[in-house]
Amino acid sequence: MTLEKEIKKAVETKKVLIGAETTMKALKAGGLSSVVIASNCPENIKSDIEHYGKLSEIAVKPFKGNSADLGALCVKPFKIAVIGILKPVASKASN
Image 1 (cartoon, one colour):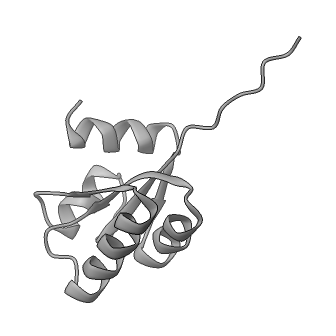
Image 2 (cartoon, helix red, strand yellow):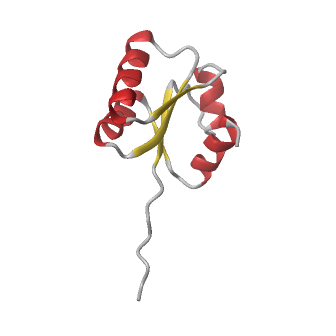
C-alpha cells in the first residue's frame, strides 16, 4: 500500500491525528502505528518527532509533498505538517 493510500484510509476511518503537538503526545504514549511528516515540516519539529519515533519504535515516514499537499490529502482546507496514524484497536471477542 502506498503512503497516499494509507493516509486516505486512515482519514476515511478517522484513525488520524492532525498537528505536531497532538501527534507528539500520542507518539510519546505509544498510541500510533506511524507518523507522516510533510517535506517542508520545520526542522525542530521534524527532529523531535524522529527522536521520539526511534525511542518508541514507531515508523516516521517522509511525505514527498509539502504541507499544503498533505492538508489536501487529508481533505482539510489548511496546511498540515505532521499527522499521526493511530494503531488499530483490538476488538474484544464476545463469548
